[in-house]
Length: 361
Image (cartoon, rainbow, N blue to C red; front, top):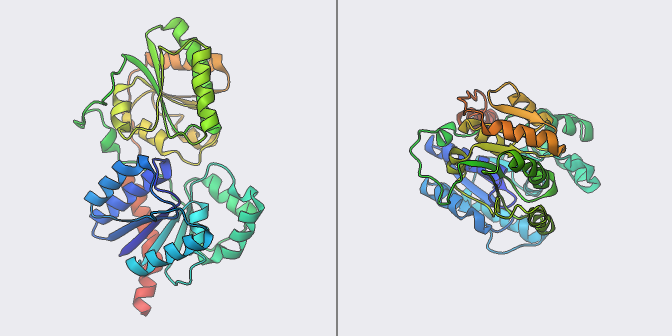
């Protein structure tokens, strides 16, 4: 089968990391896979593209920023060139554009957003018009499906497929090299884009409480600078609280597995998530986790070493981080949340809609 995976922008983010995993898994399974995008590749995607191309996955990204018509023409050229049997469009804008094309290829679109995109009236109207152009609508969480039913209405194939990760990449004994940074013995790490919803400011305020009891603790913040003003606020708060020597604020990292193996605590105070790849990676690594009490994290509340707290409360959040520093790593079984599980579910959807077409051709 020839599978086209479409993303909005090739960047170092959760949805794109999932797509990379799915593409490589299906390519190794004997299928032909292509990843395409609406926007040009971002600098932080270089390593991921190298992995994709080494695995034989085709990458077709535009070299310039196109306008609306240009995006449609680019996508049409991609479809004509790759000739997919099945298209999977990840995120709202990618799904809208590809369903405007005059093609008969079955399309599934995947809702990754942790917020309700259909609060935007234009997006809601567009989705209502194009809804049936998708053979399947996939949510990475039940929240996505519930929002679709409430805002758009029923669809013949509404499916929940949770994200999955390759747990073997995050195992303690997988032989991967240590990260190329000096790692303090008691390092807390938060990975995620610099936007208000990821709440790095909450972590810094809680960390101020941590160092009062544990002066050897250090905090590492890594992520794509998506909101420049928010990133500046993060740097400013670190300086304001006198934590410059204890907090490292850096950009995106591609060696996430190594960072998780060498750190003592993973912090994730997100205000919203659909179903976070970063959270699953932390669970797979065994690192103690302190995260916010949001619905998408509740499934992990029973895992060893996972503590869901009110991360907007710096005292409660700080106590949880301090306790986690002395918590041992755990061996967590992520049944249903592995890359293999997720890839198989996507393939089942693809075969459901591709095989009848091939039989009737």
